[in-house]
Amino acid sequence: MNAIEDGLLSQQKVISLETIRVACKNCSLSSLCLPMGLSQEDVERLDDIVKRARPLHRGDYLFREGDRFRSLYVVKTGSVKTFAPSPEGSEQVLGFHLPGELIGLDAIDKDIHACSARVLETSAICEVPFAHLEELTASIPSLQHQMYRLLSKEISQDTEMLLLLGKKNAEERLAAFLLSLSQRLHKRGLSPSDFYLSMSRHEIGNYLGLAVETVSRLFTRFQEDGLMQVDRKHIQLLNLPALETLVVGSDQGRRQQQQPG
Amino acid sequence: MNAIEDGLLSQQKVISLETIRVACKNCSLSSLCLPMGLSQEDVERLDDIVKRARPLHRGDYLFREGDRFRSLYVVKTGSVKTFAPSPEGSEQVLGFHLPGELIGLDAIDKDIHACSARVLETSAICEVPFAHLEELTASIPSLQHQMYRLLSKEISQDTEMLLLLGKKNAEERLAAFLLSLSQRLHKRGLSPSDFYLSMSRHEIGNYLGLAVETVSRLFTRFQEDGLMQVDRKHIQLLNLPALETLVVGSDQGRRQQQQPG
DNA sequence: CGTACGTTTGAGGGATATCAAATGTGGTGG
DNA sequence: CCACCACATTTGATATCCCTCAAACGTACG
Image (cartoon, rainbow over all chains, first blue to last red; front, side, top):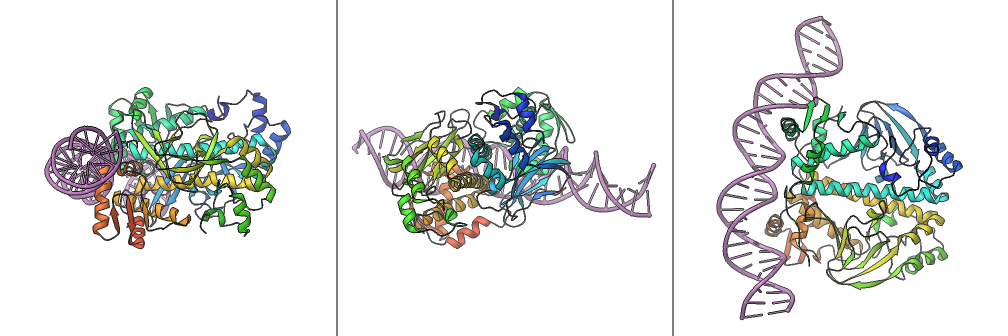
């Protein structure tokens, strides 16, 4: 289960690890290399279009807002944040991207990047020229389906985030954030309860729609409550079930619902 | 420009209105029927898979959360809301869908609907069986590209909404909501400044992450300020430029930004 | 015509932003 | 290696936006 995305495995027939290994010989795009039903040949075609990962460093840009859209990017190791300029200077952090995750899908429509992507720590990133990928998907139906699923999944994730920002209070938001990181790292075979944050408190707050101070206070509180151990960027989640309970909330963390017709 | 989506026309070579008319003879999916480069034959193939619009009434469900995913839906006339159950009873309104807009893209990934779609007023809705559409896109490259763009566009829209919920205050949110409706209606050839709201104040509040009372008070205030005329569900926007100014905000409507590395 | 519900308006309180300042940390240059 | 600076984080005090509670009113529908 290590380097493999849950969602991609589910609903798919079992395939040999060999197939995966070959497809990922570039460690290129675990998200894309799993479309089942690909022949060895197809897998190699997919692999061929992927540019090998080059190491990037903190602060480097994958692309900037306004750039022409050319490629998707897959995080191999490290992490990346995407953010959009809010009118007038300030920014909205749109997401943090961990190993195995795809960046740039939102730019297909306009053919221009509407957000910027910046590397948070030394990272290895693969580039997938979209034009090539698109050609390939036209001739490999299962790959096409995979692409639809990836795009659709991105929409689902945004939807979840909308729910978070629209309905959750500060406590629930931070708990959800921590659990999300935990689960995503776990999928990649890393520890779900012991990890380093590559982003600042400021960036976390921005992402969650909270002030830095609120984030800081919550970290302190969570620690006091025995939910986690915080040491600078080093995080240890001591009570995952409790965090999950927090996220669900008593459902009255904030605001109310609407009624039928 | 009437029944045609801006975004779909842009970046596309000019085509004859005839082509569009044919493709839309079902009034099926104006969002999908515009992929340029389709032969007359292709257009007919696309058209054939679309089930004709049937009239639905307020409260009818297009699908419910948990339903197996089979089709996308295109609003022909009327309006639809989508909403997801928040854990424990309450709901989060995810979106309001006006004529020409597509519903259901988020369900492709899991093959199960994660949200419900409910008709807000008597509406005509077209159904597009996704399996058929997918087959078709495999053999018509430009249609495939169109699908990618539609999915991508959905992501961009969610992203914008994230920014709204994360960074805007109540006033800015409502102004943005009104402008969004205005612009989308305008695209469909309807008045951008005079329309009826098919959703309740409650639903608007839920969607925007605000309490009903706040929405109501803001309507009152906007009216006092001469920005709009409100009579029950009937809305007249009297000062679109001023609303736009409101949306952009002085950029300090709420919260702050993060800093570089 | 009555009941239910959607909307509006008012009063008050609470969650979280904002302001301010102390402390901790990492990097730089002397 | 230390002094220094910039900045990240934490902590405290205060302000404010918006939610919550409450009630009146309007409207729709049986």
